[in-house]
Image (cartoon, rainbow, N blue to C red; front, side, top):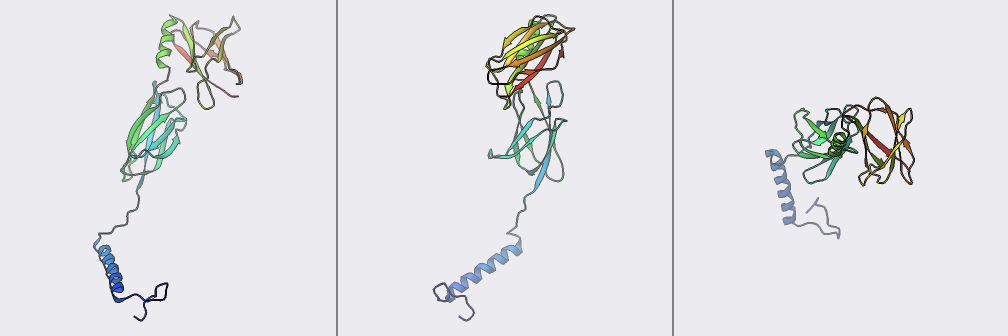
Length: 230
């Protein structure tokens, strides 16, 4: 068996072993020639996602989490100042579940199918304030006046309950005070229109935040989101 490669112990392969090896090699060549064995190259594509609020305004900074059919996280991106984001590097032909999340808004899920062939499909998501129903209640309780409502949360977007919120006017008047509930929500109904108002929020263990003066409109709610830091 001249020319054959010896085993590690010095023995050389027998004729039957050599024949099986040659047969396997010939079979592989035949399958490749017939096209039965095809090397698959992954195909990647993109999609466009737009996120808006209930009034149709863009929501920048919305986190978009893409999960494949097995639930594995494929991409995590954020919308730009236009409320949109082009997401690339997704497997063409696969359906993805996208979760859109933004502080003070109710998360939304949507299904997207990534197309191949150069097309960039466009999808849209609408986010609603978590306190939308309570905002409507505050407006109704204000009669013809306006109201100021909002939330107090920490840097990780976790609600801060029992934070003290103070409402003052510019020029000053007798301040109104309230505390946030378990969801970090507060409301000042019955705020007279025509003046500018300043809101201050503070909580134990956190710094005090003072908002710039805001204008109140009759029959409408002015919303403020407050983020406190240790």
